Image 1: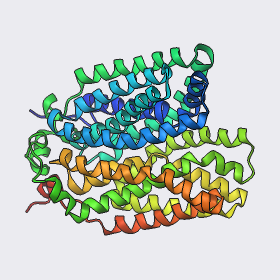
Image 2: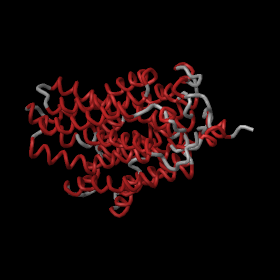
Image 3: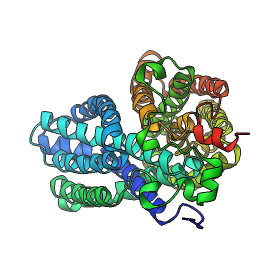
Image 4: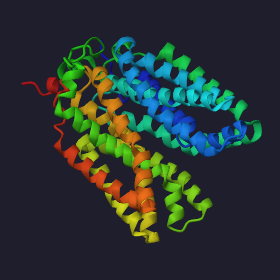
Length: 423
């Protein structure tokens, strides 16, 4: 049957909007939202806020283990159930965080939130995007990753109002319940592959599919990959370290951005306000970056991202305020770039067929790398007593990432690409 449609298609858009909401929840429940949640929970439990923040760090590490488990489950029940189930888990966890009666209960709840959203975002949604849009991943992920920026821009202020008027317990029930409902809708309507909806990858016609795509069903094939084979493959490690370092830099910058802004002379109010401004720039940047990936390919887009990070960091380190402002615009523009590339680069190298197996190995290792941003920031600042010193390290890591991306052989194992270029 011919599918004479353009763009992502109605069901494709449903998938992208669902992914957007998972990234949106990640910004509100776990990342930027902790600025509101942590002090409220600390006051509720009558403990120092540093204790709660410490639990968040532990939850982030445990979240990697949850993501590793999700990667294995993903191959058995499919990414649609993983994505939806993880959002439900995160919603229930968020309800428990606001109603925790002890620090251990809060830690367990945050493990569900952090692990659920991380696995739902990059294991569930990441695999679904690769299945549905193997040749449009950059554009598709730009829509999905935009959710993080909106989470900062919309969800965090909303959470602030709710906590201020209703308290952390009630507000967490409301927000968590909405996430659970969305997750339940996902379990009913999401599908692992477009074939299950009578469609073709990238929403192409039947003729285009037969001419330019592998006919192997991705849901029934591991692409010939095993864990051992992937660990022995050079491209696995190039994907892991190139995207992992970019994510480390992005997270390291954002978690210390207010402190760095104050270090260069901004007031606390202005330094905090810059975060919201950066989120707005990030929304625009996400759309533009999706087009860049589509036009230039993931390798050139990755090199451009690393190069812009080096430039932004060097401008910021200068301490000259006009240059600092330019650096902040660049940092805002790149807000969704690293999350996009974290999915797009391995997806472009390994392709759609067997991606669930590939992602079950690539994503957990990548997560371990970018979670080291807390350690890098802490160690460097303890030695040099300056956030700018950490920025120097981030600039070096960005440059290393560029070299790793340049070493990648794009489409090396992409069976759709091979089918499209067969003689």
